[in-house]
Amino acid sequence: MTTKIEFEQFTFENRARTPEEFADIAKELRRDVIKSLYLARSGHSGGSLGTADIFAVLFFGAVMRYDPTNPNWNERDRFVLSAGHICPILYASLARAGFFPVEELRTLRKLGSRLQGHPGIDMELPGLETSVASLGQGISIAVGMAINDKYLDKNERRVFALTGDGELQEGSVWEAAMAAAHYKLDNLCWIVDNNDCQIDGRVHDVMSIYPLDKKFEAFNFFVIEIDGHNFSEILSAFQTFHQNHKNKIGKPTVIIAKTKMGFPISFMNDSYEWHGIPPNEQQMIQALSELL
Ligand SMILES: Cc1ncc(C[n+]2csc(CCOP(=O)(O)OP(=O)(O)O)c2C)c(N)n1
Image 1: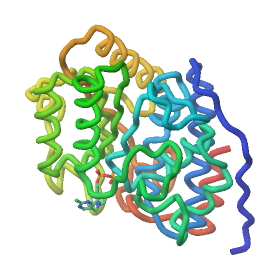
Image 2 (image 1 turned 120 degrees about the vertical axis):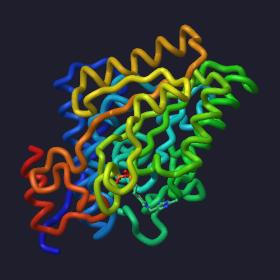
Image 3 (image 1 turned 120 degrees about the horizontal axis):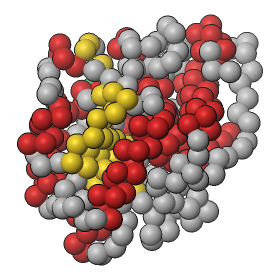
Image 4 (image 1 turned 90 degrees about the horizontal axis):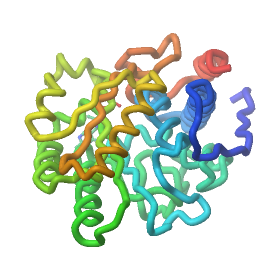
């Protein structure tokens, strides 16, 4: 390696923001993703970059309640990354929120690191709520958390979970959906990263999941469809979910976010070939130059 990689230590507050501010944060998160994946020499670039705009709003737009100085705060909302393979963007978000030092991002996928290639709760990473890796399991865990909050602890916490769209080919996902609706989980916000890309092709070619809006409607969800790269639409979707929760509508909310894998890097954008590979040195330099 000839290029020296620096991670500047600064964090972002979780507060109301303008679309321009979200854009700056998303750019920073994407830079972290590119650098950590380059250093790891392996990992998932496409989904991590494609969802950065959603993470910018979710973690830094006063959407979720959390306290990085007290990760186990009892009143926090919880986030479950069911698509565990795109954890580089979760790690970047947690670091920039102040859960752990930003410098630690350089340990992605290294032996003994807390930032494993698929997040493990046994690594005791602050801010990480559960282990995730096996597609379809995270969303079931999120449903369990929401059932606990609504019926056992009877609290005002909310659960946010993100699945991929290829992930929706897992049968267990639809058992989770059935349970979420049956238990009227208006405290659950399910985000689908609808990039129509999966490990080796287009989702609509490999095994179609469409029509997605009608499927979730049939499962009795409150369905919102957005452009996952439009900050106003992302924020407005989360605000609608807040209202749904406050008004106790008796239905879970799903946000179907149309995204582009690898967005906005010119040579990765909307290409499933970038599902599971890291940038090499030249690609890393090029990508960072597009994120200035
Ligand atoms: C149960 C299970 N089967 C297979 C895998 C391997 N795998 C990881 S990501 C992935 C594709 C997922 O596609 P999608 O949810 O669309 O994610 P994206 O490609 O957008 O990152 C596969 C097959 C896995 N992690 N878990």
